[in-house]
Image (tube, rainbow, N blue to C red; front, side, top):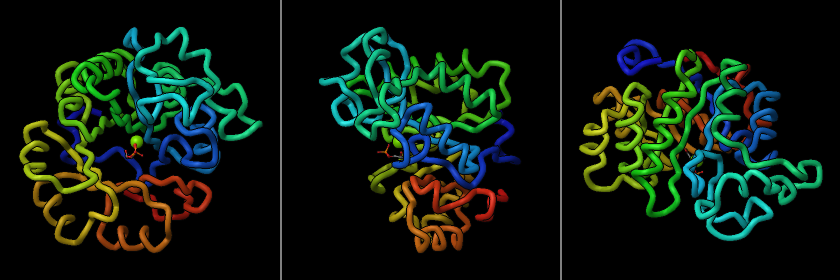
Length: 256
Ligand code: G3P
Ligand code: MG
């Protein structure tokens, strides 16, 4: 899916599983993606950063200790060491030994299944531009010839700018946890096709403003029925959720 095609079609389904399958499996692992898929999810959000030797891989935090058996800043270790870490035992015994996935491994999985992927570029602090450049380059290679939908998002404009330089045809979305000054100017300058906000920020006025600017509107992390109903009422384009066992894409109006 190229930027030019997005005016008329939006290739993402309404429902995206957050970090693979939210909290039901170790986040940002292949096991999480498989669990999300088992619940009917066909689109996934995940967090991607760089190893010290510039291999893109999945991890949310700057540091390893919350979700792996390792310690310290993940981006200071080479992929050879990161790939040996246990990223599953923290969640439960049944996931002991689950590895951190490289982006290449996840690309093979989603493309093999025709799933859509929203890569949140999540740079180790201070590496925003180089992470965007490297993730863009990796994806331009990994998704070459694939029709599986791909979307970049980031809270960090420098990361999106880097990805734009190395993968200009992959659509981009600005992530917003607050409506900071000049976000619209920045999103326009980056030629974003979508805005992804904390769901508490989404109002009828903001939804209308996004529509007027031809930006698709997505929200994270939406886990309660009352919030889903409110967002559906606003005509939201995408819902990123942890609650893959509560919301079924098959029966929850996944029609856009
Ligand atoms: O991409 C949406 C959401 O994942 C952003 O927040 O902290 O869960 O990565 P976080
Ligand atoms: Mg994320």
